[in-house]
Image (tube, rainbow, N blue to C red):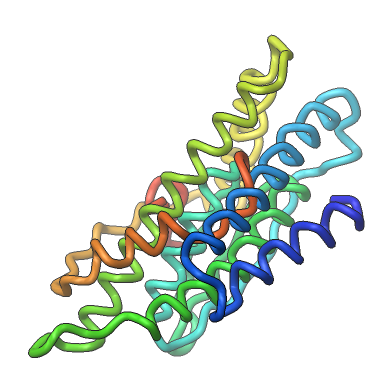
Amino acid sequence: MSEAMLSKVRKLLAKAEDPACTPAESAAFTAKATELIARYGVDRALLAARDPATDPVGDRVVDVLAPYARDKAGLLAAVADPLRCRSVRRARGDGFALHLFGFASDLERVDLLFTSLLVQAAHGLSGTAVPAGEHPAAFRRSWLAGFARMVGERLREAEAGAAAERDVPSVALVLADRSDQVARRVTEVYPRLRTAPLRRLAGTGFGAGAEAGRRADLGGRGVVDGAGGRGIAR
């Protein structure tokens, strides 16, 4: 991502992260940032189709720490999957190591968004009261699940919109081929990968978290629960 665009996206996300920002203002900043990030992702994919050396497949490991490590890992997967990255969750201490696979430009987008969304989620949780009589941890886990689910859905819609904007007949094939290349790399590194089981959450915060995810700043039209892109190493 060019330094000029990176600076613009960071400024938009920083405004969205500001606790003094109203929900409407945060949503507007996030939408613009997501649009820039999504368009960038499609443009880089088309460029790499002509010159693969400009955007190689790579990987990186992201440490996700307690508290709520599993929930943060779910948010990371929810961001990674729509951006054509795959994540493999490995236990590490009282948290997890998320091994991410994707093209360099997509990994860059994931890192930028996940860092911002963690801050936005923390602000959202701090401003949401736990209902009387409910266990705080259970409520917060369900809140984070709702937040991640909505973020994932919005990112999928944004990516599809950015691809549709490009008047290039081969764009769908280019993006599908990139996803296939990433999947093959994951299989090479983790040939015995298994899918993580679904979680059962008892808290009642899902709806409030989903509403916060609906307002979260994603940066524009192209940047869920991400179970489809997550695996567990064994």
